[in-house]
Image (cartoon, rainbow, N blue to C red; front, top):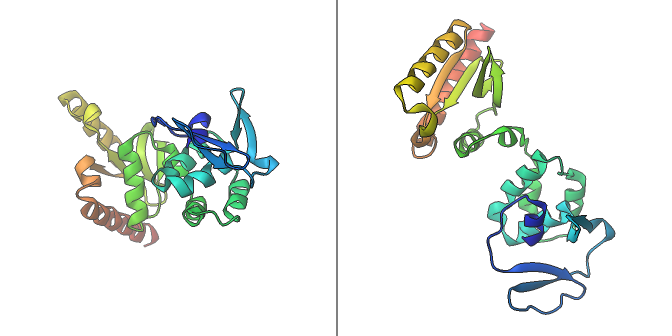
Length: 221
């Protein structure tokens, strides 16, 4: 975890520092030692002048220790251009715990998650994945507007309304004008808030699937 934090892929607020040393060493107050006998030259790097394990090795270690934060770290590595899929895959081949989940994440197209700029957008992408909805383009320009999610062939937009940006009369008038402009361009718009994407996820997924299916049938008619 300390290596992941050193690379800036995740924040680490723990009071324990993980250190990888030959033979494993001994734990000390605030320091947890890990065995380095299986380290290869390609597992080593330097970050901000400090020796650290490579991004690939850090992700493989994280998979076994903190799998709940693995997808976030992989996503951030991809966003920064540091995700070497082959190198991470080689780490998985060493039989470490958690690497089956890591392989599964590597097989995904993480482009929508990387493009997401808010927790609500990220949760909507996960909603699409979990309900078998084709993944949309995220945060793309459509007819002069930056939209949250877009299915290009079906010409469907989903806008995700966080309270901070959509709760005043002025915001609502702006959103209405935006909807009209997109409708005139032949684009259908659905708007969802936090509750729709979380507590009402199944209902939201059903409405998205229904509209995509309807637009697909119309396009192919």
